[in-house]
Length: 183
Image (cartoon, rainbow, N blue to C red; front, side):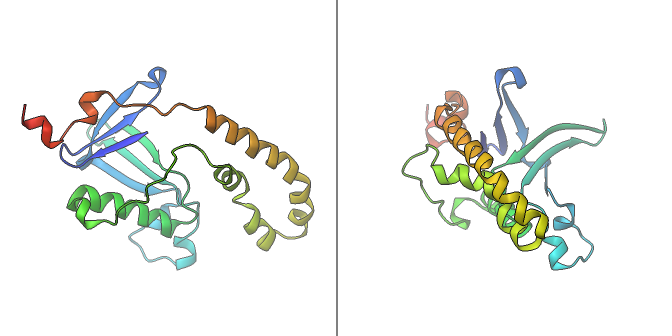
């Protein structure tokens, strides 16, 4: 779980306790990329090349003096293509730089649990591309794999239902809020 706080200009990452617990990074040191490096490339590339990949947004923090990585997180799930991944990054960047007024209000989900279609999309997202561009081998292979993938999607959904959403400590939840300074 990730929390962006524009007042304190921090990014809070909630890891398992065995993976370091809660890690705090400075927003100003964050670097963004996608799973397709051509998507953020300064050199001109074709639109097809720029939209390859799954659009997974990656934030990292690099210590240039020590030449080492201080942190790396994948933000959200795969966006489907690089254009959507860039749009997701732009939404986060505008929120942190300009404020909540500069971005559209997010869609509030009535229930934070996992819907079955989310698990189906997670497992079957490659099927349309493989059917359209994969060729005859994939046309034979995908129907054979579909029952296994359906079972995998069902198990994924059950695992998501059994997950407990992590909670940040109260000091992080209230960091930067107006009530903090009035005490």
